Every structure is written in C-alpha cells, then in structure tokens.
Amino acid sequence: MLVADLDFDFPAELIAQRPCDPRDACRLLVLDHRTGAMAHRVFRELPELLAPGDVLVLNDSRVLPARLQATKETGGRVELLFVRPPAAQPNGTGQAWEALARPSHRLRPGMALRLPGGESVGLARNLGQGRWLVEPAENVDLFEVMRRWGEMPLPPYVRTALRDRSEYQTVYAAAPGSVAAPTAGLHFTEQLLRRLREVGVETVTVTLHVGLDTFRPIKAARIENHMIHTEAYQVEPSARATLDAARAQGRRLVAVGTTAVRVLETLYAGAQCQGPALRPGTGHSDIFITPGYRFQAVDALITNFHLPRTSLLALVMAFAGVDRIRRSYAEAVSHGYRFFSFGDAMLIQGAEPAKAGR
Image (cartoon, rainbow, N blue to C red; front, side, top):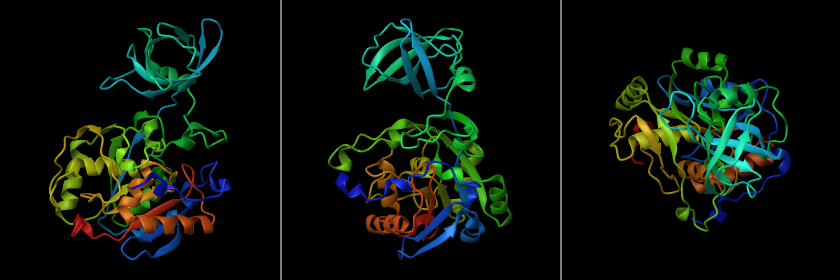
C-alpha cells in the first residue's frame, strides 16, 4: 500500500482545539463495515449502540506531564520532553530516561541541565534525531518533578492551552507512562461508564503506554517499509481471564482506541477463534496492522479521526476497509466533524463475535 493512500483532504478549521464539554456530548459517526452504512449519533448514546455482554476494553495508561523547561549552565533554555520512562522501576529516582530536546544542535554529552525546581540532570548520550539519554542526579525523582513542574505534552496542532491537566487525561487513567493520551477514551465520563454497566456492557482495563512515534507520519513510500514503534503493555491476570471468558462465550470485544487494539491483537496473535491469549501479559507490542491484516480479537472499535499518513489511520483502514474509511472521513468532513485528539469519534462495528470467517 502506498503512503499516499493514507492522504485525505480536510479544512484546518476542523482540527479540534479544545475537548468537548461535557466529554460525552461529542459527535459519533457509526459505521457498519459490512454494509458501509453510516449514522450520525452522539457519544453519550453509546449504551444504545452496544449489546449486553459486550466487553469494552479500555487503556488505563496515564499521561505524564512530561514537558519540562530546563536551563543550561550558560543560561540558555532547553525544552525537554521525557518520552520513555525507565522500565520496571517503581519511581524515576536516578534512572536514565529518553528525552526529546529542543533545540538540540548545541547540546553535547556531559552537559548538565537544571530543571525548574533546581534539580540537576545530565546529558549522557546523543541518540539522534533530537533524542538524548538523560540521567537525573541520584536523588532526583523525575515522576515527582513532572508532577510539580511538568506541562502536558499536547500535539503540535493543538494551540490552545489546557484549562487543567485533566482535560488531556481519561477519567479512568491509572498507570503513569504515556506521553500522549489514548484519545478515544477522552469521550467517556463516569456517568456514561455507569450507564454502560447498567445495560450489561462489561468493562476491562489493559495498559499500553503511548509513545510519540505513534503519531509520527509514515515517510516510506510504501507503508510496509515503515519501521513500526514498540510500546510497553500490561494485562493483569484478572483482565486476561475476563477477555478469555468473553471469547469462549462468543461475546464481542470492543476496543476503545487503536492502543487497545494493539494490546488485544498482540495477546491473541495466532490464536484460534475463541481460544485463550497466547502472549505474555506483560511485554512490548511491535504489531504493525495494515490493510490485509486478519484480526484475531477485536470485534468493534471506538476511535477518533486520525492524522493522514499515520500508522493509526492504516490500522483503522485495515479494520473497516480502505474505501469505507475514505467515504466515512469524507462524510465527517462534509458534516463538520471535529478531527484528531480533541475531536469527535467513530464507532466501527458489524463483525460477528469470535471473528468467524475473518
């Protein structure tokens, strides 16, 4: 597939600059990917659109306020965006982090930088493309520094400041580690989740920490030549048991966002229909889902409208079909839907449970 096939036209004024208030008042384009039929709904109507017994799979990763303003010994300013926390550490004390530095061209290994609270970090190694391995002083807990001084890492196309950090956080966020929000989940409220449970929709949480590479455009001429990123995921035994039971009983798994898709398809890659998860409950997902991929776990998908030339759009096209997504995006544009992180949503459904025949 050519990367040009991931292009679509949209006016810049459709890029949402603020989240919808209330969250569940955003618009919802419902697509049946078997027939191509579309309907215009509101997100809070989701309990009417899902079925009793469906399992809603939520990514509970919490966005880190990972953007920090640092100062060189000469007084020059450097913006640090901490993009990859240390693995398997209970906190950030003394552990090296990968960070994106701007401007980067005058930085050198061994330089010391001072953070807003006076904390010291050192540039250990240049990783290329503006990325550095950054080592905090032994007594510096970067999680705590971010909590006190950090800014939320909004996408560059969002130019309006947040009223507060919670606007870029799902209501069920729990496990800190993402540098971008799993945005399909931003539309849920506590009240909507309660209504879904009341009508018999089960919820289960998994964790996949979102990295910046998720949103980077594909630059290879053919998307198959794109080097996909890896992201850390975790599925607790109780969640895994719930997912296995739902599949065994022929109930649908409804992924909330492409990150939940990546977790589910990583867990069940190579599994027979209705079989148990095959992959470990903790690891790194490097699955690259493009048109032609045969889904093993996901029956329905709640997702936002994605940027052109991204792996996210390729995944959605793989799930619903290239032509149907093209028509859906054109429909959304013609009806003035809001796009990208703070924009409106899609519900793509139509598959039978357990992926029979897919």
